[in-house]
Length: 247
Ligand SMILES: Nc1ncnc2c1ncn2[C@@H]1O[C@H](COP(=O)(O)OP(=O)(O)OP(=O)(O)O)[C@@H](O)[C@H]1O
Ligand SMILES: [Mg+2]
Image (cartoon, helix red, strand yellow):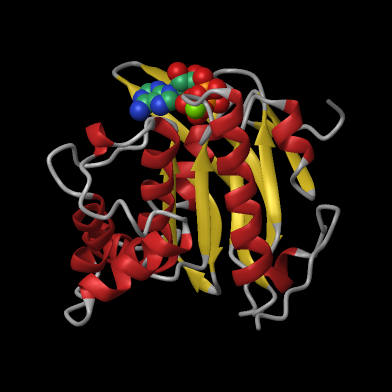
């Protein structure tokens, strides 16, 4: 069993402590900024964001459209680099890595769940779930591992179905099985229930929370839905590229 320590409030620590490889934290973000340059125009999407997430936590990120939530998720998930600031993922400094090193960390440490599922349309559920293992260079027992992951999300009897032969909720389960298969340090879900009806959305949320409870998987969920955010143990509010916990 994973022994997890859960904090209910953001923890403020001194800057010099953050560089210490401390196994308690899966995410340590210090003063992250992101500036998108569009020709002459600069968009300041993040303007100095600091927070930590402990192993095993469930954190919701909320905020108005355009406030920087996806930008932040892309940095946390090693899909993009901050313009400035420090970021440690599972104790590894990632804010100055090259693209290939970033991809390698991403494949090992992060599972993604997107609003639009992002499954390969022509591939079976099984082949979709095998994909992150192929990227990570796993060579053995791909089929068995993918099958186990699909069983974990309740789809053991749908492994040969393609996405268009599955319901929306089932497609999102495949995406969750895919996110889990490399045993990531963290699952990042950007509006995971946004394309689902209420019942399917509730089932996806309870699946994610069960995985958190039983496997200790750290979860970060972007949502506009206050009922979903309430199921997290902590909410980080973002407004205009800054954390605003007075919303
Ligand atoms: N690749 C990009 N290039 C330039 N500007 C961008 C890019 N991505 C996002 N932006 C800008 O950065 C700001 C933050 O965008 P972001 O996608 O992070 O918002 P969000 O909080 O996820 O919004 P939503 O709730 O609508 O998904 C916005 O003003 C957006 O226009
Ligand atoms: Mg977004």
